[in-house]
Image 1 (cartoon, rainbow, N blue to C red):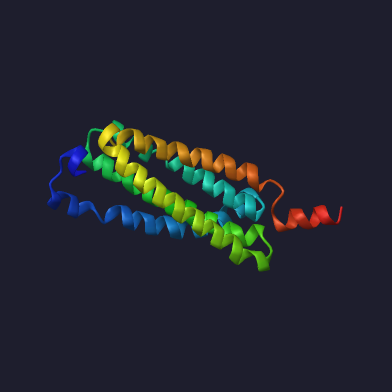
Image 2: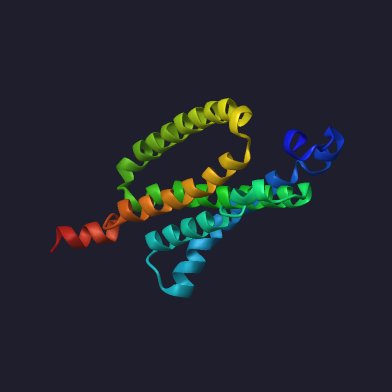
Length: 173
């Protein structure tokens, strides 16, 4: 905000907490969303979580446009949408391991997911730091929106036939 939007530190401080509050609300919404989608649209639980991740990925297209808006306040609002959507996706994806894996596999699967997230976060942080000075933030935010769309497509492709119910049906067929 200081570099791209030329805001003073005092101005940034007034709004800096808002994306974090939005992220908290997104985490809560993620917990309520899949049961709502399952009931409302009669989806299996696993697919209601995937649908919630897809909704979050669509919401992440908003923050992808941060580089296109002129107003710093609109940029902050889009940061809030991004925080909300990211935490909603995170809550849904973290819960998927309990839905897809057997009880004795959940801890291992969650551990690998956490490790992959940590490595990805570290790598992305290093990459953003190196690229922001060269190309600016706008292309990086655009990539964030695309990454979520690619991620939900990959999730839907990988999750096919992976729910406990579907595996049980396949074993007894």
